[in-house]
Length: 402
Image (cartoon, rainbow, N blue to C red; front, side, top):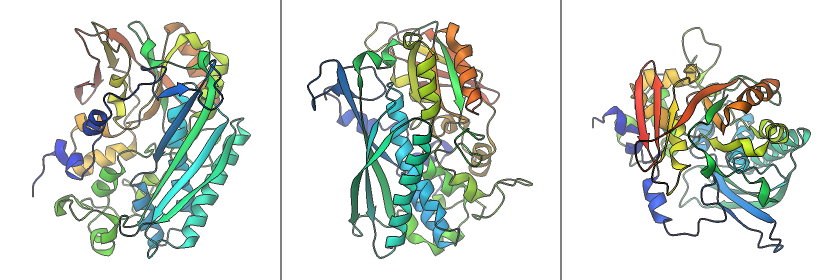
C-alpha cells in the first residue's frame, strides 16, 4: 500500500487536529473562561466565588510502547521514570497555560497487559512520578501524589498506557485567558531543546506528541518482527517501523545522540519558568500561554478572537532552527514540512503571546532558567472570521486554520 506523505500520520490511526473529538464535545459548557487554554470551572468544592478549578487529564501516549521496546532490548528500567514524567508534564504544562502554578493534586492511571508488564515496571513508573514531584518541589512548585489505579486490562491494552489527572485551584483574577490575544501582540517561543536548569541531561525536544509517527518513521523493520505487540495490526505494513535506525544507532552520522535517547527524551516541564514569568511580568501584559502539544505550531489557531467578526492571524516567521531529531524524522520519512509543523513542536513547545513591551523580560527570565527564547512571530488581524496560522520558513510558507 502506498501512502502520500501528508496522509501518513492519519493512516497510523492518529490525528493531530482531532476533528472528531472536538465535534463530539460541541455544546458542552465551556466553563468560566471559554477562550482559555484549558477549561476553567467554578470552585464547586468550596463554593468560593473568587476562586476556580482546573482539572486536566492526559498521558504519555504511545511513547510508552517505545519505552516497552527499549526495556525489552535491555536499555534499563530508567525508561519508565521518563514515561512517568511525560504523563505528568503533559497535564501540568497545560494547566500552566491558564496561570495555574500549584499546589497540584496528581492521580495516576496505568492500564497494563499483566502478561507482559510485571510489577517492577509499575514500581519504576511510580518512582518516576515521585522523582519528578521532588524536582518540582525544589523549584517551589508543590505536587501532591494522591494515589491512582493500576488496571490489568490485557484484553484492551497490548503493552501499557500511562496517564495522569491533575487538579489545581487558583484565584479567578489570576487566570490567563487566551481570548485576549490580539493584533499587535508578539509571540515569544521557549525552546524545547538544550538543558534547563532543573534538567540533568540535554533534551531532544520531542515531548509526548507525534511518537506514533516518530518511532515508526525512524526505527527499522526488525522491531516489527520482534515486537508485534508494540503496534496496532490495523496499520498498513509499509508504515510499521519503516525507518532505518536501531535504538542504539546514532541519530545522524557523527551524532552522540542515539535514536532511543532522542525519542525517549522526557517531556520538558516549563513550570519553573512560567512560575517566575508570572511573578515577574504583569499578568495583564500576558495575553496567552500556548502549549504547542497536539497540533504543533498550528495549535494556537484554536485560541483568540472567538466570535469576533475578524479573527487573528498568527504569523510565525522567526522559528528556531529545525532540531536534529525533527530533521532526521523528516529526512527518513520524506514527510512534508506542512505536516511536520502540525505533528511536532519543531523546536519550541511553549509560547507566550504578550505585549511587545514585556517580550525582552520574558526572554531574559527564560535564559536565566537555561532555556533559549526568542520572538518567533506576531499577531495580525486576519482577512475575515476565524483564526489562521502562517508558518514562514526556508522550506516554504504553510497556512493552517482552526
